[in-house]
Image 1 (cartoon, rainbow, N blue to C red):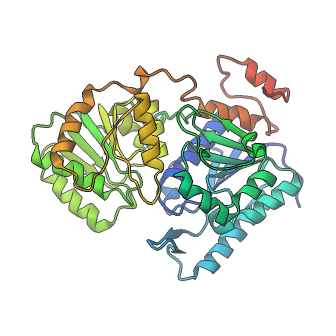
Image 2: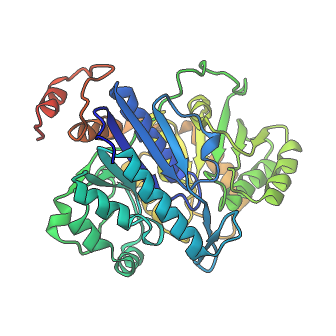
Image 3: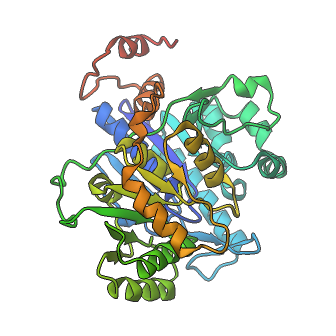
Length: 414
């Protein structure tokens, strides 16, 4: 094995079987780390088929492992290769393990799935544990309904991994908003490893001029996230504009790259027939559209919620309830706090109800009307937490309060 590097290296694993959430969260963390630390590199292991469609900052790169998709019956299958699932998983596990062996990270961060897809990251975790590499599990603010999460974690044998493998658990949220392990019986030793970071603040990429390429008229952004299960939301908004031409603001629809092509074509044709609706299949720089909108209509996944908070946007959340209740739980709690408004999908999806909600949206209070201390401190907290494990501590920009960074550099943590 080659000599251990003196520059800092962080390895991030994201299983990415579906959607954009995991990849976008990992990318935001990677960019924040290299911005803070001059001599740091971050490598992302991702199974996302569109990872190459995103821009990455200098000293951030990715390894694309063969993709899989989850079928409606809950089973997995290869995304592109004509191989059975066991062959694909064996290949993925080998690539992950050998990448970690060669890369020699100072810190390994696993996103959401403690043991990876079907346990594919277990051997890598065990190898790195033996080498003394700090292991971190990063969790979003909401995982799922406890009644559903508990048996899933028991089946996957997650708790022994949390007890014996992981050194820390970073929760990218706040306990006063959501506790991802609420209702789950976990040992106190696991609870003691949990650190709430706050939500991950998002910004518009510096290379983009303010307002570049945005509609000239005020607009409401409608985003279906990855789009794989966003057809109900898009159809509902389109029917609202079709039935009520007097809705005062334009709509910009972003379908998401995983929406079925035939649905995209149908929705595009309907949008083109409306004078107040624009549509696109995919936007890799969603931040610019979010920043320019007068309001946002979304399903309320984690990344979209972070963007709504970051850009202080008045938001209408229409959460999905299956296969996970994550979005519903987050939306309900956020509405209780006064951060967003919520319109539940009752299966009927009355066009008038959506039109009325769209008319109200620009007049509701923005998230900043509610004071939640530390709400958007996530990336700053992650930088500080990660810094304790890195051989490099020189920041590219010194924060206003430098004392915590000085304490971290000295190996202290309160």
